[in-house]
Image 1 (tube, chains in turn green, purple, orange, cyan):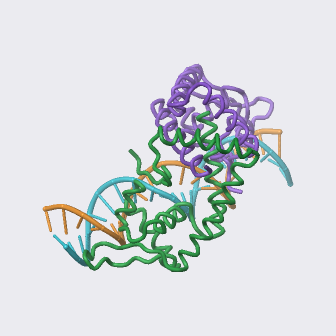
Image 2 (cartoon, protein in one colour):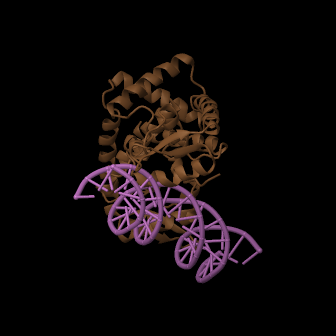
Image 3 (tube, rainbow over the protein chains, first blue to last red):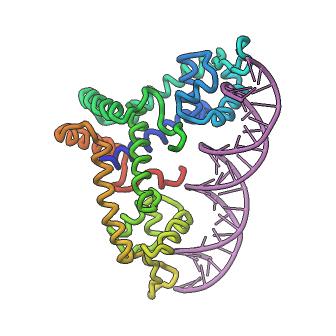
Length: 146
Length: 146
DNA sequence: TATTGTTATACTCTATAACTATA
DNA sequence: TATAGTTATAGAGTATAACAATA
């Protein structure tokens, strides 16, 4: 069962990666876009802390998003060491498309289950996620080792 | 839900990795040990084909296992290009220990669920695994891209 | 001195393709 | 010529630690 979870999780991640690749995003970039869209203005350190990743890892990911004009780093005038992270209008549009992609993905992954079975599975997975202390919307793959 | 599967799958894989690290095995090595223990005498190509991985990827993994005397490559006398893969007695013992580790892992991953809930979850995951064409005991992480 | 973000560096894992030995 | 296994090489992704700018 643990192994099946690992198998299915890998399949889900892989397929999600293929879908977001059509938006020219990597999986971590898709996660960042969502996180920043949901709460704009956070510093890179704050984002890194939420994800549990070293801040240096964000630099290249954000560089790419900024170069493609999906995201803006704004210097915080109160503390000029900080960069506030905001989506551009193009970034917002990409985030919308990401929502569509995620819904398609959800349907593809849960294919073959009835509505009642989906509900039941969602509940069980939610229980496990809680038991393992998983934060809503944060993939453990961001986490630094130890 | 797809995302929760990815989260939980990553957690399961990560925790399994920590456990097998105590046997000084990587996750792919643990999988190989099991595969070879279950059906000894296969060639490296046959194993690679089952896992969907390029044969060259196996070389370093098997080198390490062989150096540690857990595994033996026997030249097939009928076709000296082939190496038959067999576990040594030490390899069999490690495989036994792996079974214990896997059982502990299973319990840890499914913590907090009742026996009935485990059964129900196992069934639902099995359905999904079948829908996605997952082979029993083969982790998609071995698969070559495309 | 401390903190934010960045850069420099190194390491791990993997795929691809060239190579060898056998057939 | 074809196949099994190996080696050589390169690329992606990531962590760590040193660094510059700002506080």
